[in-house]
Length: 81
Ligand SMILES: [Zn+2]
Image (cartoon, rainbow, N blue to C red; front, side, top):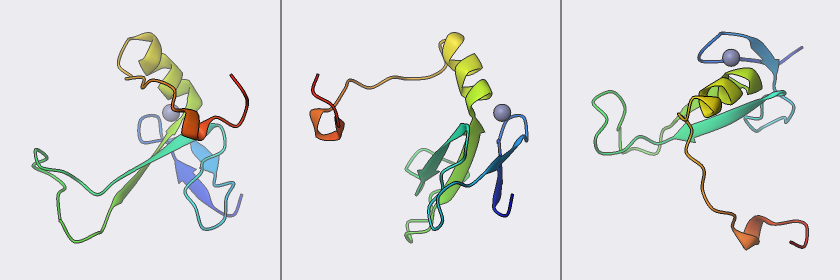
């Protein structure tokens, strides 16, 4: 496992399955450039944070109602609905 990412919650290691991109295997990757409202990260210089969360931690949070879900967007549908 050459390129290891760690879950921000449980610290489980995950392989980065896409060279040049942040794409954890058996997990999800998130990035933010910060925003107004954060007292921690809002540099307004184009820099960003990347966060990895393993599937188990996302699933557990989703089951507790802690994960928001957006509506489907046809621009991202690869299959006919
Ligand atoms: Zn985890």
